[in-house]
Image (cartoon, rainbow, N blue to C red; front, top):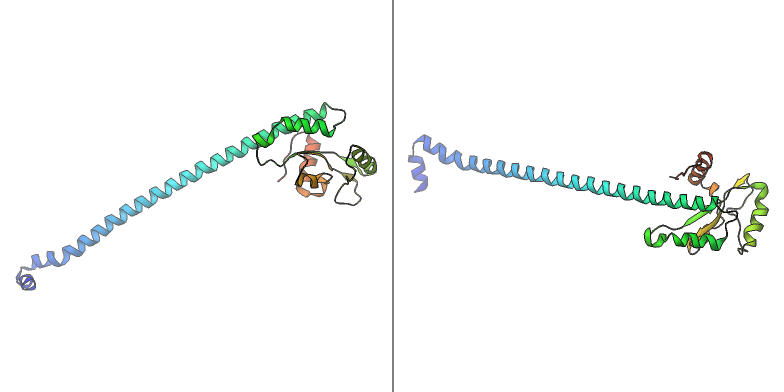
Length: 191
């Protein structure tokens, strides 16, 4: 009956019955697409804002951590400048008082590097060995015009024990930072 009524209906009504439902479907799909596009863009904007906020927080935390390290290093520099001879026990007490394990977890250690001319290596080895480190040696081995071994490191345990005696001048990034610090008298970071 319905098909018969549609054939008998005037052409203007037939047009509405045939065209209006697909037109409504297209219109509803268009509205749904617009809402989806808007929601997608809002979600993307929210994720970008969250990403930028997280990046800013990370950058702030890094600046704060580096600032703290700078203060620690300035303290160590003052300690070294005010001392005639750095004894291990004194250095251990000083670094222990910084409470770096509690205030800056993840910091592996604080070390002192001493510039030693190649001609003074034997005297340097005798000095450090005389302080109770009988197995102390500068590594990697080899003759060089200048050395910069790690002479003190705290805490003196775990991987830090392996670093004792390491010639920092043999590590290109450390060499560049050490030379920059030596030449400018300012703190310098390696890459």
